[in-house]
Length: 235
Image 1 (cartoon, rainbow, N blue to C red):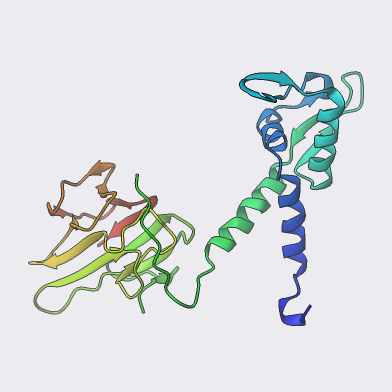
Image 2 (cartoon, rainbow, N blue to C red; image 1 turned 135 degrees about the vertical axis):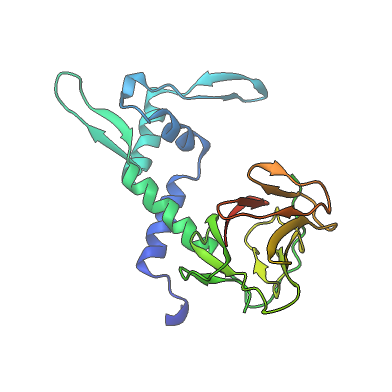
């Protein structure tokens, strides 16, 4: 394996953790072990072979085997060894580290633009740098990223929000955002936003969906949701 492509320590660790999670019983155990439980108090049910509508509990040894995999990956920890015996509980630090690893992965971008279909239901912005007027990503993989909305000295100005690269506000991480989803307009000293005709999942302001092509004035503190991404408007 070339040195340039050899996995680094963080990637090897992530692979080990993901391997431990590659079974539905272990995922169920993480949910069950939000409170400490002894081995005898852990019940995991699985579908009966050939009859998915019926379930059966797995054996205590089966539970123990799955717990060992989670313990090895440090996703579960043990507490106590006195009168109450050993109990098992999720390891929040390891789960947080796993979530952060996925957050970093979600920021990876291909060098070439891909034509991904929108799922139903330069431009990328500047991280952690406030402009006089802007949209700030407050929910999404790039929280804190700022998209400047600098008005012109005279006349009208438009900014398009969408997934297509080259737009003013690029949200290419979110497959629920259309290629061109929403339009922010500066006109007559006022910012406004509207849902574009091409939008499949709509534009929301302060948790209210905009009617198609209807323009809504924006005020400082307004929350704009496109797809699963939320942006804070700051004038």
